[in-house]
Image: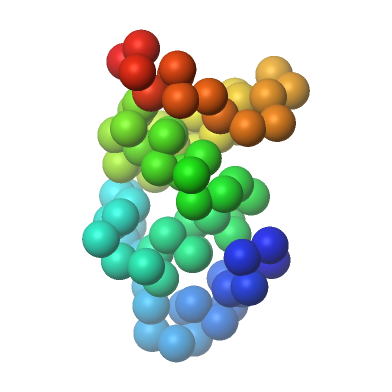
Length: 81
């Protein structure tokens, strides 16, 4: 994984993320979800600012930006919401 944290390692270390929300106060959840979603911590943070911390909504947001060819999320997206 790009950030050095495999999903398997996070779970096997006892760091199981929440069921339906991303807790940005826990570093291991940030590492887990950036690895899982294939985004950077900044992209994850932007997605959470725009759509909230629901895993389903963040996943849709990230996928939508990847699908439209955006190499990175723009801060403008976060400011518009």
